[in-house]
Length: 261
Image: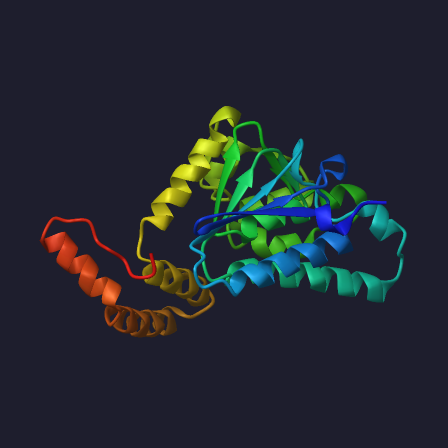
């Protein structure tokens, strides 16, 4: 019997929290219990006003193999499946709504809901050996919920091809299709993620939190509504002390001293 406390491991380093999936023998599959523990970790982290960035990582050969098929097979009930997929959907929405950028650090394969997890993150860096698929179709199940996140990252024709064939794409193709930001040699993955984290953490915390919320919200708006919302967001952002400090630092060729550091 696995200990739920060990399903995810959290590590805080100044303003950066790393949440690591820790079921390597089960390919970090998203069982009910993992979804609960991961949701709790995200909810707790979201209340931390000093957080600047979150990294979602995993241990073992796989980043995440999606839902726990053994558990799903053992609970053949439509209401159970409704609750499970809504639970997973809520987790993905929590990542999208998380107040600071979430970076997926992908060291291995990401399939089905695991690929959905990557697509739900704001940014993603992967090892060149990582592969991605939405492979439910291979067992007779169209990956409908992963399709929501995937189709918001990858173009319609390519995302549907992935969904309808279940075939893997390489990390290099995932970069080209917009699923991840970059692919690096496995031995450089830590350094690549750290560089991205450091870049984010060097910016104004107010601007980063404003930008995360604004970017995600405007994606669902019409063009006109998005511009109205963006204009109001920028006007409010301009009133922040960090903006005055940042412009003054730029004009005087000095490093800005952001608030909240």
